[in-house]
Image 1 (cartoon, rainbow, N blue to C red):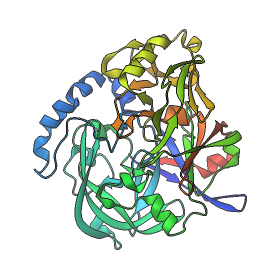
Image 2: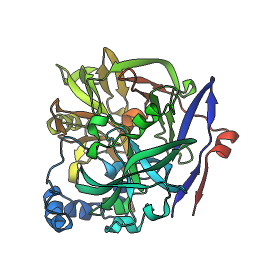
Image 3: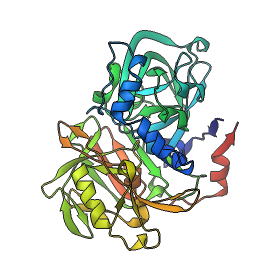
Length: 416
């Protein structure tokens, strides 16, 4: 089945904002837990087991690493938000995760040899009159393996924008079960060019180059509520003042690759517990949870009363979760507080309701040290603006979007 979303161009205060409706779906982790197959999945997808099992799938020139690299992070197991794009002439539709934690655009190829490609829409280059093949390949590392893709150029359509000659990858190998279970076909990276594999020019850079956006800004409004009609919006080219309240506070980027910023400290119930001398974090729409160094997150779980489970998950009691402490990220002398309402995730299993914390230990190391990742749990609380012109991130308290009859007409979804 494929989800097709009808997109409409909105006009906002004389500036054209290109809106991409986002669909919110249950994560792969949630789907597996419902079927009591999560433990089996993780046992088969541990990095060393995965690398050995799929070693024969790759040529000698492409090495399978047993640890995540410092350049790319894809938390597809928890990805929930995606939208629709088109590639080729005539256009071929794909559902993609809009990911600020990476910079490449890729979709499955019709020549892909992986099981994942048999259950997703694949790009058929031979049907596109505007396709250009450049003969190169690239690979992207993620937590449980490595994706290999051929590089090409073609016409990309997002909302009412047409981008001619966009670099993108056609995946030819997506080993493992992660992408088999994913509801999306591919990924559209919104990070800086420094992260792009194969020297590909990122999509938003092409938009700026072709002057397709009035401002070099894009912004996210994510909906955490269990309302699958409105998952959120990605707004290209500007800001929607109706989606937040109060002022936008701007934070300078510390390193242009990921959208990386400096944390002054992290408090629990108002008391500094982590990063007393500051640390680095990235704001990442491709990661659902909030992650941090293992030693810190394990301590955080102990403070908030999280009980360890398998595979770095922690549970809390569903009856008393509302009394858990708040967690505050201090950035440029301002506090950004996440309450239990935002960080406790309720999941229905076959037998009961389980309450999990949205914090996960992950030792994601770069030249800047081990980074915290402020994912969708954080971004759903704060309207998030990514400003390429001034290399900064803007955060404001998100306003809950009210549904109108026009919204229903504008966001038409059909399962086929």
